[in-house]
Amino acid sequence: MASAKKAKSKKAHAAGPQRTPVTGISPDEQIVGAPFLGKVRAYDPRRGEMTIVLEEPVSNGDALRVKGRETDLSQRVERLCVGKSCVQSALSGETVVVAVADRVRVGDAVYKVRTP
Image 1 (cartoon, rainbow, N blue to C red):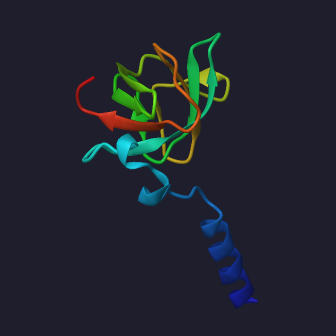
Image 2: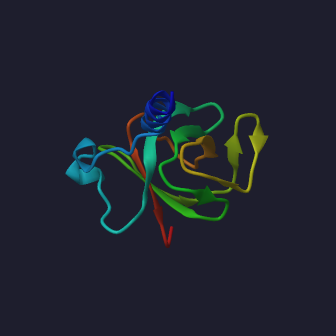
């Protein structure tokens, strides 16, 4: 009985959020030394918002850089929402919606940088 519990807990832990391997980020999207937050999962051009599943925590006021083939956007986090409520910070594994100043594309890499 105890071994079945251990097996279940290992499966539950393995099913949690998975980190994106470096090989999943093209060299032109990589920013050395900056924490990788995740990839853009969705973009709403009418609202100017992107959706990301976080791999690192993020807070309002943090500087972000969205980098992709056609995208290179640096800005501060001004509005951060989890679900339907806006929050001050979010933890890794959470799906967040962040207001963006310019167009981003699905698959763009998002990093937390020190200066915008």
